[in-house]
Structure formats: C-alpha cells, structure tokens
Image (tube, rainbow, N blue to C red):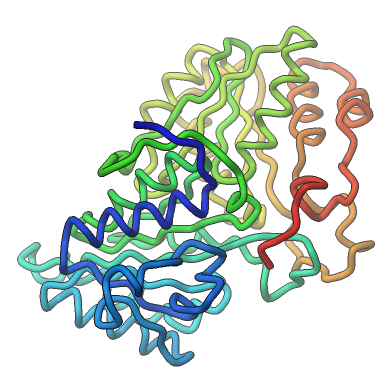
Length: 352
C-alpha cells in the first residue's frame, strides 16, 4: 500500500519498521526524545520501543560515536542521530580511524553496522558553522558508505538498507527536503545502496545530481525542454559507492555532462565525476564536461550577502545553454533567483 507523506515522516517510518523487525536496532543521539523529535524524524520511537532502545545523550560527539562502535561490535545496530553535520566533526576520529577501518583491519571477520544520520542545509541565516555540506570528506574514506536521498521514498528505502548494511553508513539529509511530500510504500521496502536513479530521460545532456539540487535540476529541465533541450537527470542517491555504469551509459548517449554539488567546488564530488568521465569518455564528448558547486568561501549569515550564493535552476539552465552555444543570460532572466532566495520556496517555514 502506498501513501503520501513527508520526507521526515518517511525517515520516521523507516525507523519504526527497522526497530520492529530487529530488536538489536537502537536509536540515540542529540534530541531524539525531544518533543520535536529531530524535525519529526524520531517522534513516537521512545513510546513504541522503550527508553532502553531510544534515548537522548549528553553533548559529547566523539564519545557518542565511540559508544556506537562498541555497541555494534557486541551485536547491536545503532542509529546515531546528529541534528547538524557540523557538530559531528568532533567525532571524525572515531569515524575515520575506528568505524571505517574495522572490517578491513580484522580481515572481514567482524563488521561495524552503524548508521550515522547527519542533517545539512543552507540559508535562513545558518552561517559558516551550520551550513556545511561535507559529504565529499566522507566519500573520500575507504570503508564508509555515503547516502544522500532526494525523495521521501528513497529516504525510507535507503535508510532501511543503511541500517541493515553490515558496515558503517553516513546518511545525510538536507533540511530543505524534510517537508517535501512524495509517495512511499508501507512496510519493509528497501532501496539498494550504490544504485543511482535515472529520474528523467533525455538525449541532449546528462545532469548528475543528488539531494536537494535534484529538485532544482528538475525545474531547469522543464524550462530547457521548452527550449528543445532534453535533459537526462541522474539522482545519485548513494555517493559512495558511486554508480559509474549508470553515469557512463548516459554520457555515452547524450555526449554532454553537467554535475551538480551542494559542497564547495574545490575537491568536490562533482569534480571526481567530471574527472573520471573526462578520462574515460573524452573522445565521445561534444564539449568539456562542467560542474556547478558552491564557492570556496564560508557561507555568510547575512540575507544580503547570500544573494546569488546558491546553485538554483537558473544557474543550471544557463550552464546547459553554454554547452549549446546559447546565451546564458536568457536562462537566468527566465528562471530568476526566487524571493526569498535563501529558502527552497515561499512555503518554507523550517525546520531550523
């Protein structure tokens, strides 16, 4: 049976399903038992499964993940929740030097089935220390899987697959997606890790995206279709491992590539995709592959200073126009930056 629910509700549904299926699944972190339930994603868990399996913790991120490593080695499947990716930086030692290495260092004899939920986002005055999209860092580490779903259905399906994966998964949610609505299957419906989704077919240019920027890519594709440019949009869903076969197959047909990334430009995941395609398919490309990512500066807090800071549909359409020798300013005029520019739409009222 299917139903229309929000992205946040889909995550909450996945947690209920996983904890009903397996008594070894536990959920803890900052604010999981708070009345707001981490933007609604953990509501009702403590009431359904008890304080021994769902509990809040002191603000000590490195210890918090260290507990997860020990718990997972003793048969539990921890889901560790952080309300911001930025706060999680204090736990990088446990993540990089312990969790990600364990399976390899012990010859595959043990595993560390931890799911780490991190929330990212931009705008609304978040500023330099609450807005960082650092998925490329995690994707760089062997032994870690990195997931960034776009739709409510994938949020549920990929979270379930992450929880039951035998090794650590960094599960990253964009707060601009939490209130988005989509059709979600009830029950234990898992989406496989490492498989991208072609969410729009097209023959003229491949746009590779993930998380919130896929929403902007779809807006740009609608506009470009009216200009007789048909975009194929690949939603990566999993950033590590990457689904190279889907990317290569698409680029082989469209012969043009644009990659979108919500992280900083230098060292971005988009740069890795562009590099590999350029190396393996340079003879098939009609023009140089391109990427759109964030500028290499901290994000300002000021509403005025963030004007023009984010990659939006107009920027995407303009970049595609350049590939076809068309005037990019026309695309920017046709898809102007929305007002207010630091939220996904006028409907947005949070979460903070």
